[in-house]
Image 1: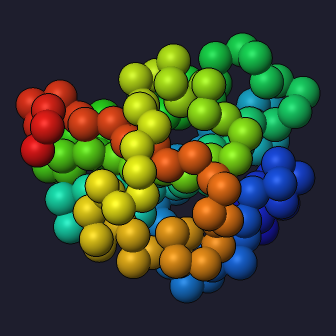
Image 2: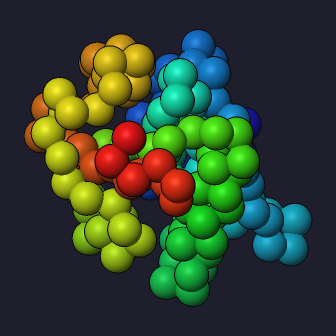
Length: 137
């Protein structure tokens, strides 16, 4: 699976890909997987996960466009916020309006995901973004 290979090459977890309910958005360039991002829904909140862009085209805005696309979809589905865990991209997500928060402030349904329970280490930054129309919900 190309998604699994891209995530693994980016150092992202792949252990739960077969058991988690993830919606994927992919971008291709000339028939090759250029980037990917996933969304797990947990009640009124979502877990943004597995954002990866092919090394050869990083820095061109594809990651930002993928995040914008998933945010638009999450809003259209009535999600009030997106949460994520990252070890390396907190500056990138901060520029997109995500704020660092304590894990316990994230909805319990999201905290019960495999990403929060066991896959991402406690040292990973926890970030959240309220989606428009849901500030502070």
